[in-house]
Image 1 (tube, rainbow, N blue to C red):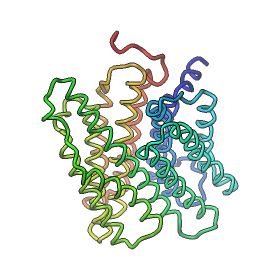
Image 2 (image 1 turned 135 degrees about the horizontal axis):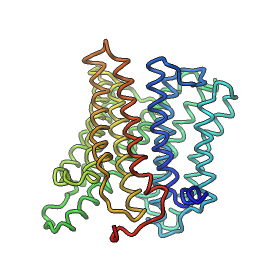
Image 3 (image 1 turned 90 degrees about the vertical axis):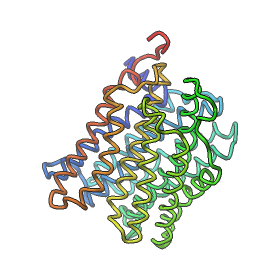
Length: 394
């Protein structure tokens, strides 16, 4: 009972724990489905849509919840969410996951209402905090959450039978809403954390990360435009161009952030690595819309290495820092950062290089995803479930 009370005492604890556990679950279920060994999925539609939906709105939704409920009170100097709210929000997130899992035997309208409830509750909570110190660079996150919610709505509208062809658009819109979030947040925290680490190490200012106004502003604008362009169904050539230019802008800004210096600090380098994979994935996806490469394979580079890599990096860093522990990634987690980047590009390469072994290799990669989040959950369990400690005493 004491552990449960502690988990519900802070947003990062409950939602980062949920994200880790759900990362394991989704990886195992998808591998079981690919290998046709039975996964207990009570699903009447396309299982691939369940897989995509739960990675985007389930796993990533929990990661976003933990981040915003932890970061926004710090940005605005307002009280953190109380345990009652955290319990309600966590319950809504969990109800959505159970509802989608059991949707084969439940009214589709009920599943839609339950699954769509979490993001508005989260948005209303952080909006009440952000309005205390309304800065445009922070208020834009509400718009991105709205894009994420609209994307999920489009998926459910097809599942309910109101529309005939909006689910795949909604799933891609959800991915790129997450990309937009990462472009903005990653663009803030990665150079800032790197700069702080270099200052602590005594490096001169000339060695610190450098910002390019053109790349920074261009990335934010294109990052916000990309999910909108997908949801309103602009021509593929226009969407592909936006994605490719955004990917190039990401790599250009990343090149000025001293990522190689961070190699010796995995918990810092992981941020650079995830943004690098994201940039490459956007270029590959944009090229695929022009007919060069497989669109779905490139989308997985973005999802696994960009979204998965950045959420893993941020969750592990925040869990350690906000529980008073040193910002040093456990060895298994440090290795997992690189493994996840490898899985992203391996997923892209398999269909091109070894299509005859596609299914077993996809299952192996899905199991690797599950192992990564199993290691994260195991290693960060003390930080997420045990009392805060004083890092200086460790």
